[in-house]
Length: 298
Image (cartoon, rainbow, N blue to C red; front, side):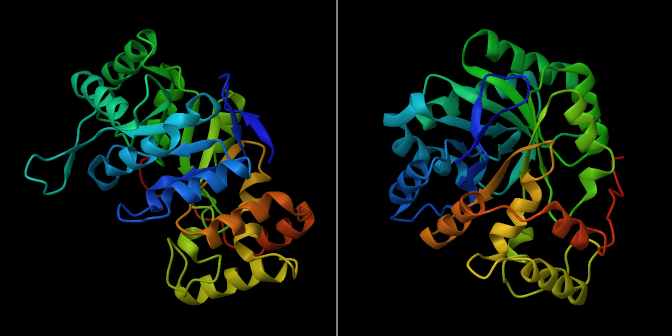
């Protein structure tokens, strides 16, 4: 496993991150999977208070507490669950963020969160107030750094200008190259690390039954998946190829991959362990695929 500093922080994180959202609350092998991931060199674990109404944080907190000083734990805030359990509401206020952080700390059984991320965001938010909350938590030592998880260019640009974010989590893959238009260069130029999610397009680049995806029809996704498979070595898998594509961009610090089984974990590990596919082969794929662009929130 290789590691890279996350933006201008001191967090040295694995090039593959463990996306904990895919874990199911009733899974019996969560500890086994996470231990295997750590043995493989993965040190970044990403969750959110929204996942399974906080149970996801509880589950990973139980596993990671004895290894806390060796790992980077990231969680997210902003989606406030309704008291009746029927959905959630967006709440980026200072009061809520401070309160939610305390609850996440308890569920994770830790004194601090390495990376606290705003879980979304709109241009109408009280952005300065939101930033104040993160800065206060940082001063109090409850979080080490903060970032944002968003695919909205207008929101991301505001946080780049007005805050001390160290990272942006966004969707990026061979089938979703929207960040290439402006965001990846903007973040790279400002030394803000990009955490890529959705690198295998919900499994569509890794053998899952085809369906339409963003601006691509089902038939177009079949063609894209075949192009990925065509450059995949015989001893590898197309999921590994899709992850390699994401990691070859200089703005990307880590690919955060949802892992639910030992098979998926092994496929992900393979993307780092094997010889890299050449940039020329990736260019051959991307040059033959229509580039998609953000249509809203520009």
